[in-house]
Structures are given as C-alpha cells and as structure tokens.
Length: 314
Ligand code: NDP
Image (tube, rainbow, N blue to C red):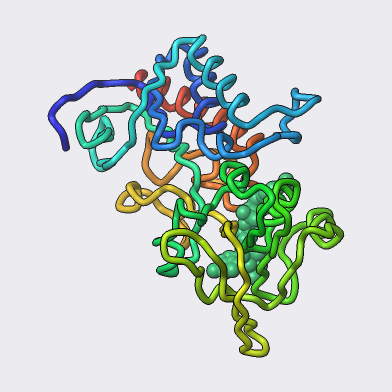
C-alpha cells in the first residue's frame, strides 16, 4: 500500500446513481463522506441519451445532465467528490485500507462499494484492434460518426434493441446480429426493432470477424445453423452484449457470485466484511436500473450510519 494516508468515516467508491445517492444521505447525516469517481465519472448514465424512466423528470432528462445534478446535490451537503480510481484494497484490517491511483491510502471506517458495471466485449482479435476505429460499445456516444452509413450491432437484449433503434435514426441501415433464433429483450423493445424498416435482423448469426485494417470496412457473419459465412460491408460495429461488474479489486475479501456480482445479506447492503457495504449494479444483476441503484445507495448510507453509531458506542 502507498505512503500518503488519510482517515475518513465513510468512503464511497464510484460515482453512478448508487454512489451519489449514498453520498447525499451520508453527507446529510453529517458523516463527511469522500467519494472517488472511478475512471468514468458519472458512470454508465453518462453514455446514455434520454432517461425517461427516472421518477421526477416528467419530460425525461439526458443521462449526463442527471449525473451532474446528482453530483451537485451530493456536494451541496459536504461530500468531497474526487477524481481517482481505487486500485487495491485491504479489508482484513480496521480501519479498512483502500489505495487510490496507487498513490494515496485511505483508511476508512466504512466503505461503500458502488463501482457499477462495464460493457462486455466479444473477445475477438479484430474487435480489439479496431476498437475506437469503428468498433464501439456505445451507440449513443459514437453513432453520430456513422450518420448516413451502414452499421451492425451485436446483441439481443434490451440494450441492443434500444441502441439499434437509436442507430436507425442516424444511419442508413442497421444489421442486428442475434446469435439464437429468439431475443432476450422485452417484447415491446423487440417489436420496435422488428417493425423498423431500417433494421435487418440476422438470426442465428455470430460475428466471425470484423473486417478492415485501420478502420471497419465490414463484418463476416457466420450462420451457426447452416455454417454459411457472409461478408457485409459496414463502417461501424457496435457491441451490446451486456455488462461485467467492476468488482475485481475486491475479490480476495468480498463474497461474489460466479459472474462477479457482490453478494449482500438479503434486505440490506451488508457484505461478508463488517463495515463494507455494496450498492448499485456492482451487486445487482437483475434490475440494473438507475432508480434501483439510487435506492440501494440510500440503503448503503443508512446501513453505514447505523454501523458507525454502534461502532462508536463500543
Ligand atoms: P442482457 O444480458 O439482457 O443481454 C445480453 C444479450 O447479448 C443477450 O441477448 C445475449 O444473447 C447477447 N450476447 C451475450 N454474449 C454474446 C456473444 N458473445 N455474442 C453474441 N451475443 C451475445 O444485457 P442488456 O445490456 O441488454 O440488458 C441488461 C439489463 O438492463 C436487462 O435486465 C435489461 O432488461 C435492462 N435494460 C433495460 C432497458 C429499458 O428498459 N429501457 C434498456 C437497456 C437495458 P443470449 O440471449 O443468446 O444469451
């Protein structure tokens, strides 16, 4: 662990709806929380467009704006919001140790993990080589670069449907690569893509290779029923196959499921380590909504507050 140290009562790791909500509650309770934003300040909502399902915004709100509002509300009550990434933890000692950017060690009486989840990738060589050169995991961020052009998107969940619909407003054509003969997405989202004349769904289709040297020129698609391969010219390739929780640095101390989602004691945000609480997508592979993340952020702050009250009385 690094040399420079600081002692805090409440350390919040992550700056999505869970982290900021925990910060609002903890700061209003007078606990002077310190929040480290992580590598993507504001979290996944900063790469989304319109949020229409968060209560309190009858006309919808842009994701980045909403996270800006959350941050300001947390700061208003005294949360210290700092840029930095938690790089290592030691939860075997009290206070718990969390290293930031391999430089600072925070000694924390309570740690609230709200590190969220990140996009998954297919894991093929051409995807990595062409990342940022036509390959993207965020249609809302990068769709604009392919306006008027043909693109492909992989995935069959709600995210893939949402992003395919979004791309169809910008691009001339969207190929949607679905690996089975059915989609996982909710019926309403499926209907939107199936009834969209600019979206062509390729069923039983896997990505064999993304084509192009320095930029995406096409995709070779494998039909896993017939074994047939087909090359389709495209200039943008989007991956929308789900997310991976950002919990790697905790795995030596915190109990998780096989996908890396943190296990919490039902009805609470308590982990297996006393004084360490988990909220938001880092511990939720079912709901994964901004509003549920915010709800568990609130729970984590209240759990931490109660824990500190008991801790100080002993
Ligand atoms: P999901 O895990 O729901 O779906 C992932 C999709 O990617 C699946 O269709 C899966 O296929 C496919 N997939 C996974 N790996 C590969 C691969 N290697 N090659 C090809 N396809 C692959 O993730 P989402 O991000 O779509 O959704 C996450 C959660 O967020 C869900 O609960 C969803 O309902 C919710 N959500 C809700 C929205 C809304 O209501 N507006 C918008 C966006 C998300 P297969 O089905 O074959 O496993």
